[in-house]
Length: 277
Image (spheres, helix red, strand yellow):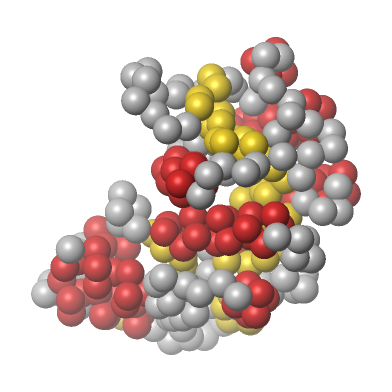
């Protein structure tokens, strides 16, 4: 049994906490606004990580720490508070503890349909993603055993943006294709629990893992399939220049070689379940 702290116990963090509790671990979830009723299988600690004082009473004897924090918005202030001030406060509180840090494939700036993996250059093209990338580098420099997990676009119950978009007769880039990458939130939890199990079993792990499903499909294909399943108007072709951006395609090979098996290997698996219950 390990004593685990999950910083940022939102939807994914809470699901992870329950999975780890069921495996026999002692789990604490750090939240700005934890649940007020006492019917929980996990402990909660109320804190805002951007305030060092809020962390004063937090235990320091955790065996493993997860960082799964949402900014609550896309403002520069929010990103600085989480990925700079907040992370610095946590590293000061836990200077020698191992972290599994949830990052984003937005740290890749590639935009011509290239395949990217953990060895690809990560030079983001926007300020918020650069802050995430700087946080990654700080963690891996502080402790080479820290692990960075880069999630692509997360979907699942409560994260149904593409379904709503499909119902609005969207205009979609078809040629050149604009590639999309995604991961079902159940696989987000599965990947994090899997990496912890590997670490506790003494398996040598890499510093970086890219977590995305097997099918980085063009948005046109995804929307065409979704509108067909939803029985609503098919997308129309959005006219773009031939040099229009095509995003990138994310490879999950490192994670799969390690042994992780995706519950939802492609968008049709996950969205069919969302549509048909």
